[in-house]
Length: 228
Image (cartoon, rainbow, N blue to C red; front, side, top):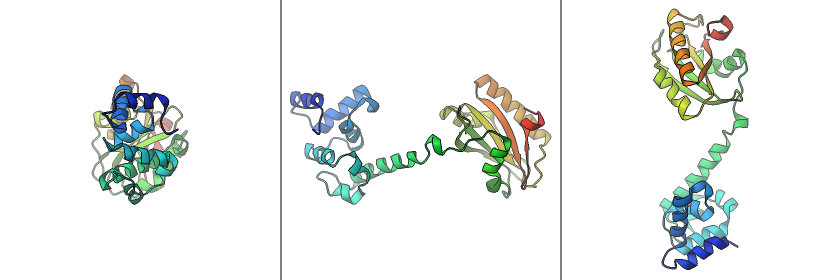
């Protein structure tokens, strides 16, 4: 059966409406997460003819996930714009699966952090201040460039640092920045900035685990130095 009994009942009671319009109303009332596949498809495509919805449902979700835009366009009522919408939705789902938690690097020591960023950051010709956003399992859920400065400094405002951490529901943060000189020894300004960020993090409940300064194949950990 392509449609649930409840869905067919609604359709029979409202013959003036298309399957897609009924499905979209269900989504608006109960939310996407509580809706059946027709509601999800209708949310992407808009109010399409019943023939279009029937054709999609007959394909099945697995087959649709592998269809190209041209294959979608071969179905009745699916023009180029709707075909691109469907292809984009399935491609987005595939991209999400590539960044699932099991693929996120885990950092349990300063060495783990250094190994993660050293080759990328040690040759940069300007200071880059980066925030590694960490979840409760000590996995890196995102890497955010907070600022790009000059040869020997970068301006960092706590607002710009904590904004992505809040948006991504990070449990904690590891600060990372490079010294283009190759010498990872923290400057007095590095210490002042770190102290300020740590204080803000304590107030917000998003704690700073460490601050790693990257040099040329060398690094310094604020935590190991007792500076955090």
